[in-house]
Every structure is written in structure tokens, then in C-alpha cells.
Length: 494
Image (cartoon, rainbow, N blue to C red):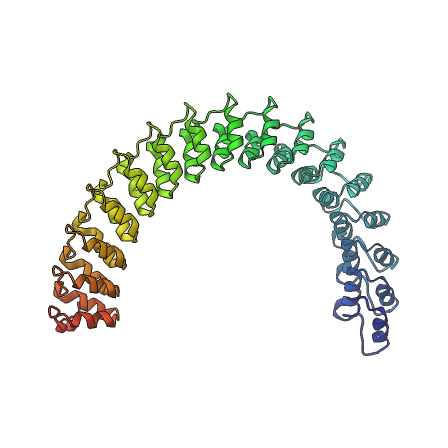
């Protein structure tokens, strides 16, 4: 603790006590003193023969280098036991990574230090972190190769937007900015480092169309308007590559300004890939993009059997459904009125309202699938809305609506359905009360028992048998109070 916090006088006092061993715990005392830059403590500890400053793979000089403690580094290097090249020259790597220029200079002056170790990691991390002066010093060393590891240095500098570092590296003939499919410009475009993109484009070795025009695709996806403009001004760049991927990505991620810019380019086809752009913009809820696309005569909003309106209805993008319904080409009844059926499945009340205003839409399609799904899941508002339409039949498929609502415990749904004269709660041998009792839905059992059509003793008193088997005590008691129920049925195994 005293060494870690730089209390030199206390360290002296403790060292005078023979019970204290400063080399204990793998010489942690000098390690933490070096790491925290406590020069006087380091000096005191080095004067003790028991202390080994090279312990733990020369941790002390590595830590001091990482933190930029110049004087500590100097005093440690003066000790012959210290090896600054230990652990694959980690000392200069850490100093370079953290931009400690003076420490890097000191280490380079030591013949044991090799700045090219570990595939020239020192210049790689200095470039990656934008430490310009460190990069300059390292480049001045003949052992350093800035093109090592597939030109990682310029790739990392480009990706992180370190313009000055990129400039210096480009001036070195060993560096190839086109390496790895011109990764550098792709990364700079993706991160919107405008000036880096410009300087890379000025280098004839760089190909902005590399890797299937990745650069403009990445910039379009992230909405980097300035980068997109710069790339489009380069004749080598093709925004329609890979089936118009750049435009599709801009549409998918709602990059309105980029969508407009790309549409102004005659090479771009917004209807590519079976009108993927409007389909994906619809799914992601980008109403502004959808609006723009609908104004383009090449775009077909009813592609893939009107997938756009079907997906928008399913997800609940009200504004997009409104836009699509206003287009005469769109058919909201596609795939057996899937739009309204899916909207009901997901409880999208506002979407259902919009769809019901369209005379082509049939809310009773597919044997009243919409109301059946709404009741099964418990969407009270959707149920009320659908019941207002005379085409909807709540007793379709042998009164499946009330049967499923009862089974799943949707009390409000059951209550609403029981108010409709068309609904028969006794359908399928009183399935509603049997399933409600078995699943422990007490309030629904009470509601159903109030209806004279319901027979709680149906199917050999299955309601009370199920409730008993599943431990629903209150329901058992309620059923026992009904004269139609035979308690002896509890003796039956099934």
C-alpha cells in the first residue's frame, strides 16, 4: 500500500523492519510503484538487494512505459536486471499505443528493444490510436515496416479517421492503401471520415469500387451523405453494383437524403431485386422513404403478392398502410385478406380501422380468421371493432372465438361475445366451460354458468373433473353448487 501510493518515508520505515520483505508477492511493491510513477519509492526499492525489478516478466518497465512515467523508465533501464524487450517488446508497444513520445524515444535508444517485434505492432497501435509523432519516430527506424500485417497501420488509421497519420503512411512507398480489397477506403467510408476518403481517392492505387463497391454501400447504409456524394463523383464507383445494394441499404435503414441522392443517379434501379427497397422500407417503418419510392414510376408497391402492405399491417406501421392504400396498384386483399388478418393477430387496431375503410377488404375472410385470432390472443379493442362490421361472424368454425377465449382466460373477450346473440357458448359439447374450468379461469366459469345454454355437466362432468385434477379448488366449489353437476363424476378416472 505504501509503495502503491508513493509514501516514500513509510516505505523506508517498513524496510527497516526485518520482518518486511519488499520482494513478497512476486515483487509487487516495485511493480505498483513503477506503474503509478512514484520515482522516489522506485529508487528506494531498487537499492534493496532483495528487490527484483525484472520480476513477473519485467512488469515494472512495461507498466511504467504504458503510463508514460519517463523518469521511472530511465531509472529502471539503468538496472542491468531489467529487460525492456521482455514479453515480445511489450514496453515499446504500450508506450506507442498510448502516445508516450519521450518513452518511445528512450526505449528506441536501447539496443535490446526491437520496435518491429510482433509483426510491427508498435507502429500498428500508434497508427490505430492516431499518435502522429510516435508514428514519425517509428518510421525513422529502419527496422520498422509500416506495411506489416497486410498494411494494418494504414487500415486502422483510415478506419479511425486519423488524417495526418494516413498522410504520413501514404508518403511511405512500402505502404499499400489498396491492400485487402482497398479496406482503408471502405473503412473510412463506413465511418464517414470525409477527409480521409478524399486523400485516399487521390491515390491512384486505391480502388473505391473494390469488393463489389463496398465503400458506397457502407456509406449509404449509415447515411453518410457527404461520403456518398464524393464517391458518386468518382467514375469508378457504381452505385448499382450487387443488384443495387447501396440503394437497398439506404432504404432499409431509412436514410432519406441518401435515397434521394442515389435516385438522381440514372444507374440506380429502385425496383431491383423484386422491389426489395420498398418492401424493406415498409417493414422497417420508414414512411418518408416509402413516400419517395411510391413517387417513382419504376417502383411496384404490390410486388411479391403485395408483400409491402401485408408486412406493414402485420407490424403495425399505420402511416405506411395509409400511404399504400392511397396507391391504386396496391391490393389489400392479397393472399386471402392477409393484411387485416395479420393486423388482428398482432392487435393493430388503427391499421384495422384503415383497412376496414377500404371496400375491397373482407374482415370475414378465411372463415373469420381475424376475429378468431383476436379472441384467441385477447385483443378486446380489435374484437369490438370487428363486431361492428356485419360481414364478421363471431360464431365461425363452431364458435371457435369464444372457445379459445375461454380456454386462454380472456374474461373481457368472453363477456363481449356472450352479448352477441349469434354466439353459442355451448358449442362443441360445452368446450368453453370445460377448458376454462380445467385451466383455472374462475371468472370465465362464472360468466358461462350465467348463460342457460351452458351445461357444466357435459361430457360426463368433465368440467369438474378437470378442475379437480388441476387443483382449482374455487372452481370445484362453484361447480358443486350447480345442480346440473354430478360430484360422483370425480370417482371417474377420465
